[in-house]
Amino acid sequence: MTVPWKSIAVMGLVTVSSLSKASDEKLSLNDCHLEGITQLVQCGKLEVPENYNLKTGETISINFAVLPAIDNSQKNEPLMFLAGGPGQAAVSLAGGLYKAFNEVRKTRDLILVDQRGTGESNPLQCENAEQLDPYTNLPSDFSVKEIKQCLTQLEGDLSQYNSENAIRDFEAVRAALGHEKIAIYGGSYGTRAGLVYMRMFPDSLTSVILDSVGPIEVPIGLFGKSAERSFNMLLENCRAEESCQNAYPNLAQEFEQVKAELAKQPVTVSLPHPRLGTPMSMKVDEQKFVSTIFSQLYSVEMRSLVPLIIHQASLGNYAPLAGLTAAGDIGEGMFLGLTFNILCNEDVPRVTDSMWQADAENTFNGSIGQYGLKLACPLWPTYQVSTDFSLPVNADIPTLIISGDLDPVTPPSNAEYSDKTLPNSKHIIIPNSSHTPGVQPCAMGMISEFLTTQNPNDLDDSCLTDIPAESFMTSLNGGV
Image 1 (cartoon, rainbow, N blue to C red):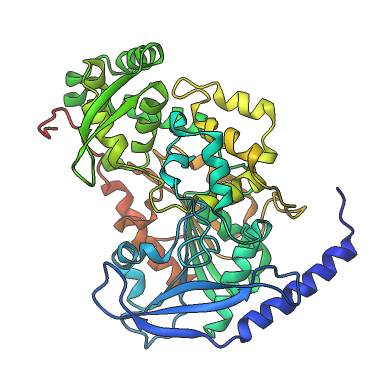
Image 2 (cartoon, one colour; image 1 turned 135 degrees about the vertical axis):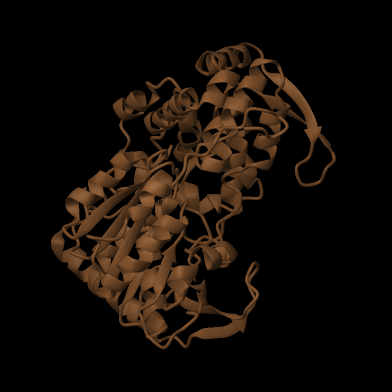
């Protein structure tokens, strides 16, 4: 459907008016304690319109936290953290970010905002969230009934819980805190949010860090080819490491063997519950096996376990695999109502049948990774996405782009889309690293330097040659 340009202009004026109203609200800001942080930080709430196109209507409360600079005498602009997902709550990550961003926090505040639909910002969560996570892709745990049950639990006008309104909220928080400009860091889906921020409010940003890019041009959800690439790199790394090659000389064949056996006959594994310690049983099929291996590829530490897990499964010992499946849910803490709401409207409608088919033509997980979105999205309410949403962003803002060379979902090739269209950007690939490597010390040093110089070029990247490859585990006793 074609939208008249005059209508877009009027909508833009209404949006600006609504943002001003949100920014004028008296801010609720108090000292608070957050898990993982010993010192007092600041926690706040800001009332914003649920629908920015309505002059009057429902409001929602946006939850945020400010981690103060260690030394605020320099009065540097703060760094706002845009969480991943979609569906992660930023404030819940405060403890880890407090440590990871220590170098940055030396001279600037770190702002964490729970995106609308997450955390304490009118959360869109399902009681059966662990069974619905589209990222862990455990299809045997999905059902139409559970998706429908999830929808009945969500409160709010779902059409308003989208990426662009999230950026309007972030912008309202910036203005309410009195900052003329901010820098932003986005990781994973947070890079998508960051690109939208660059398009909508470029004058509010001094600099941008995009870590593990999900470019607007590429729909989220097509992970088959990138997962295959990452897994093949693991096989190559194992062959190149003497201890791994000696322990698992037929690793690729063992992977195919386990897949075939589980496709023919799933197994049931008894194990202690990872949190309660009580006995539990788990059915392991081909889909669960492949999805669990996929989950481990996100982290170099967990990736080091993969050859051992595959080998043990090939010997008929599925306990290590089941233990990881039960304990390591990559979607834990995700607000899956928002996850589906965004992906089913902003991404999946752009995926053609030929794109699904091309992505499924891989030797790692075939079409298994597509199951969750294909099941949920036909049931999910739809909303109209902006006509220019999927167009490339070309804002002239200093931008540092970071990729991990082993990443199974946002490979370096993704970042090239943004690097080509952003005129003031630099793409740095972190070796021996996987998803969101920006929080590692080497990359964080470059991020800190970039925030100071506002120049993505000529950064000191000498540390890149010092990042070691993670050794693979070759024994159940922890040997490498």
